[in-house]
Image (tube, rainbow, N blue to C red; front, side):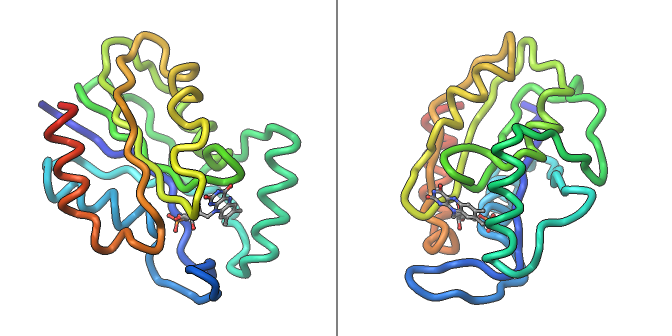
Length: 170
Ligand SMILES: Cc1cc2nc3c(=O)[nH]c(=O)nc-3n(C[C@H](O)[C@H](O)[C@H](O)COP(=O)(O)O)c2cc1C
């Protein structure tokens, strides 16, 4: 099995169980790295060409505008092909019920026919949101497996949970 993890994650200021603080590495990136450690998957991080603001409240406004417009913002590096992989893990924070728009920009450019897609999210209460059904729309021809939702504040203790999800679904 050759696998890749395609994910979006934002470090900087975020909200953790009632308090705001700056972090060096985003929650979804922590989960993505656990998956790479467990499976040997390659990591591909989707980054917005112009990053969201480091300040949480400003970022919220930027995301809101982008979602309202259903934008496809430019991304820093584009993954051209997933032809080399059988399994594609797709990792996303929940931004108002779904994925950040830069992930749509990337995923819509790939050919998912014949792939197995493993969706995972980090969130603060919304679970998987509409990510699994959104991925079923985007990833034509792929088998989209049941997703894993991890509480963002608890991601740093979630490696065993991730391993179990992989073992049960692959
Ligand atoms: C703009 C924005 C919108 C968010 N919307 C939601 C939401 O609708 N539901 C939810 O459970 N969490 C929401 N969150 C919280 C994030 O999903 C959560 O903190 C996640 O772990 C962040 O992942 P990251 O650190 O990898 O970017 C939102 C966070 C931001 C910055």
